[in-house]
Length: 356
Ligand code: RUB
Image 1 (cartoon, protein in one colour):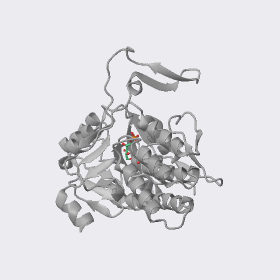
Image 2: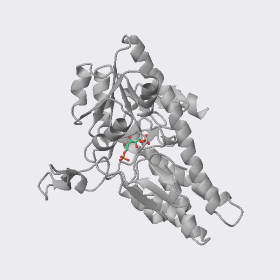
Image 3: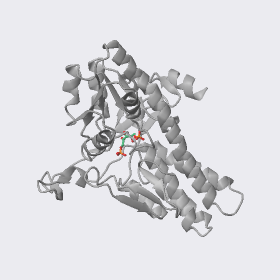
């Protein structure tokens, strides 16, 4: 099975694109053990809620591969994988699915059933993101028709494209669909400090697809929204509560506030597996990942001679705080796009659509 962010190899191992090196180098990262999968998630070799879930599931399969039939090893490694990163619910969701498969597997060898289940999870994401693209596209098409078929300007934050979820992305899926349907689009890409998923990954993806885009620093969105240079905002999600609060990359909330203040529609796109129906109030209940100081203190890139460099951008002993995610309250969100369609970000609409 071959996806844009990773592929299953003939020998049973997995090869992922090392996202830490994009857009400057496209290098493979080989996953042979469940520890490799843990490392890849923790160190953000791979990232994005969907792909974290996929690699988590693959990690459980790799644990079976290395276990010599020891079920406890698979269970132990699964618990390690579950805690590799805390905010995206897709990781724990995928691990639970794999553990259920392991528990229900009655014939001794669990390697093949677990491999099949991991592939099944990836295939479902693939189908779901195609559907998300089609639903979200209707919103872009509507704006395009209403503005006299002029260019549609879209703002996005972080990377919720095919590097984040196989194989069409979530926030970027409607954009890919619009391009396919010949609609003139332009994407404002938030740089997304500190790890620059926007300037490094989203801009790389959009370049690969030939989609016009402009990278902006994270504080620019407010001005663009005030000046009516943005028609619609699409972001992804790491965890969505039963009342529609959304945890996503740090800075998402500020974009939602600015969009709300300027009456610009703000949509969140994600597969149903990103819902955490056990939670209600996102701000008090979602665990926000705190990451290391290095990500803020250093930036990575090429120098004028084209050499890859890591550069300190603050005094080495300066205190920094690196919150990875924030929570956008449902009142700021125009709608939620999943594979099942679009609904309001409120408890009633969500219950009606997903829990009945
Ligand atoms: C990624 C991020 C993405 C969501 C949705 O954060 O916040 O917007 O995970 O991703 P990080 P997707 O880079 O820290 O993992 O829709 O691609 O699953």
